[in-house]
Image (cartoon, rainbow, N blue to C red; front, side, top):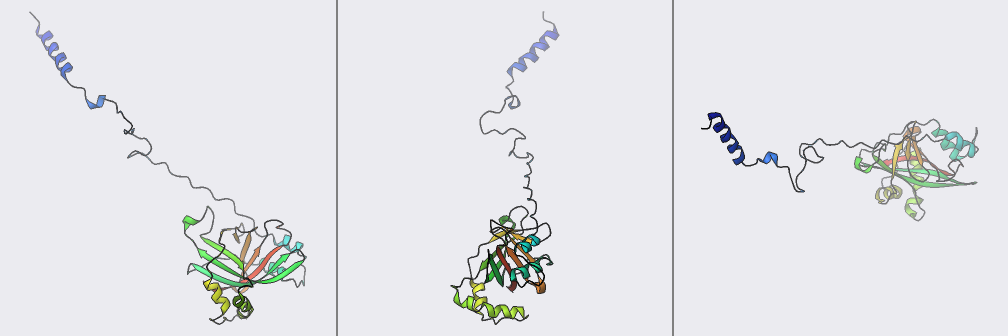
Length: 243
């Protein structure tokens, strides 16, 4: 005769053998299963992207080096030297363009060795979204061009318009030069950054430096890709026409 205890144990073991395996005991199989906590899985912590650090700002324009190369001295009548004298005491330029697209007109002196040529120049400053700039860059693009002689009407009337600005007047609204600046579509835009001392530096050619001169003019010095300290380059003073 079996004891009651043996009968009870036999019943428990029989129930355990008849029970089907649970899903918890079955490991996930197949390529569609995603381990908990794996990157991209729902609820998994995201890895923050690390922003690229901006490069160190470039140095300011070396005015003394260029003055020495151009032999600028007291009483010098050189126009490039006159621009450099203003740059030596200029203020930081804030290229504010409420309209998003501003234009400037100016006169400049192009130096190539012993030859200095007076030219007319135009500039555009265009606001751009942050998605179009790199680390440390200003949210704008700058283009500085020489007005070609082939644009006869604009070129021939540039002197008249500039003299109006130099006197503190406003050129006629029908000025062919101002109309040319307004209608021009193609501009060689360049990104810009701040220098260590607060000048604006456009990354074009060997670099173009901008600062604010007397009467809210903009002073610009564009250097060649080679021979930056030779004195060669473009020395300009510009007036805002539209902003």
